[in-house]
Image (cartoon, rainbow, N blue to C red; front, side, top):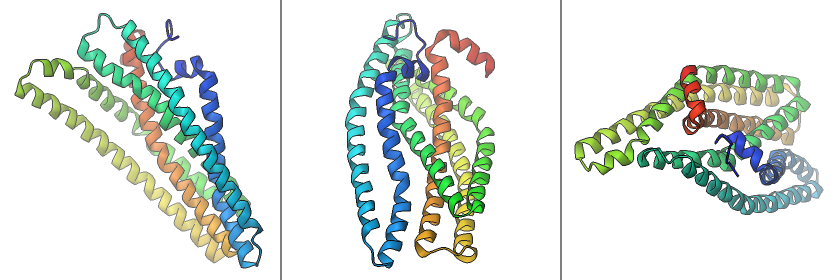
Length: 291
């Protein structure tokens, strides 16, 4: 199926669009229901305090639907993405006759990361996008200031990540280049060579981890400021019920959780960009020129 196509995330999405679309429909449904949970909890709190259990039953219905869709999506995803991994592996082996075994072995693992992105990272990104949209909409419904504070935090995070993208791309390239040498190094069966190889892998992994940690720390500072500001505004300035205060704080936290997934998604995308350039010979030269 992949003959004549570049081995990229976009190619996989195009060639398997029917099956992937179904997983996205289930993912979107699951994310939308999950994003509504704090709102229904807030309504249930106000209902129970007012002597009514109607909103509680509404909450129970949403939770039941969320469970059913979540189970169905996971059962379906495993089969769809397992098939895509097989097709991608076949394509890589078929077009890599001249590639050393060490490099092919490493690139087979790298290729699986493209599918892992579709199965694991992208659904998380979709769920985060839904959380973003629902959180801002609900916060705006309570008070525009709450939504504006969230939007300001999101803009600050985007600016911060822009400073990290090139570093992530470069470090992932160095890590992948070293990984391609692994089988060759092990075939020589010399302890100094193996130790040097493992040490280089560790150095690149530590540098990547350090960059991720710094990015996470900066982003988290913005999000903590957002949560504290919205909590203060809801409890000390706005005239809202206890359930509304809970919903405001919950959606501020949901926004923060969604935001924390953004650096992970973007870092993964930086890595996949480098892997795609490595898997496609024509793209490799252009990617090297750009980098």
